[in-house]
Length: 137
Image (tube, rainbow, N blue to C red):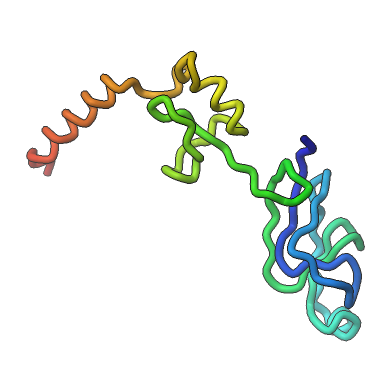
């Protein structure tokens, strides 16, 4: 898979051309901001230029890493209690760059030290319940 960057938003490759949802780059986009009256007269609006004259965005845009030319957002995973969970689910670190990498580490061989056993988790929950009734002030 090719790793690269995506720009999503109101993106076009030339003035007054069809607006695209996203454009994929194999190298990190270089950003140049334009908002002077000549630019606005030519384009009809202020714009942001990426990689010189290769593409432009009007208004809000986002740049993010992707491994797909279709600009799918990269999802990282963590092994939590024997299951591969997207890092966005619990705001975890995202130790594995792909689901398959996570499954190798988290599958039949356990989590390679990256998860908490069921017994340990039960102990943590038990201690947490005990602390609920304490005055920690």
